[in-house]
Length: 107
Image (cartoon, rainbow, N blue to C red; front, top):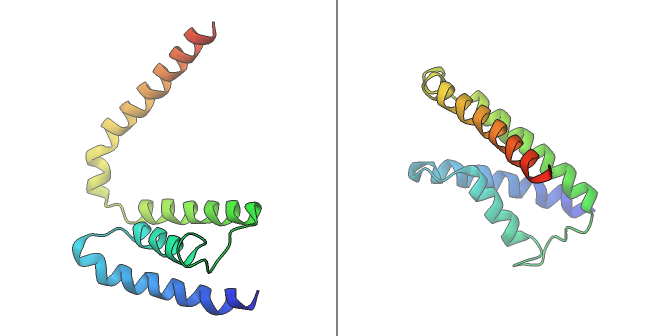
């Protein structure tokens, strides 16, 4: 359990530094974080075992919340206005058509 307090912050700092360095080539931070998870997880270096399913789910939910907040807060108003109407239409029609198709199949 002590290793989480030593290795966790070092991995986070490494991911942030790699993200800053790779920002020149527009590499998303999520790819760097996933790559670090794969390398230091039980797949490659066999350093960290994800045996606790509940803890893994909670961490994944927290990461998803952070990604959504980052995406929402970093979106420029002009970009949002440009795609708001088409995205809203696609979402509405997508839900309506999926509902109708599901109703038709189940009926």
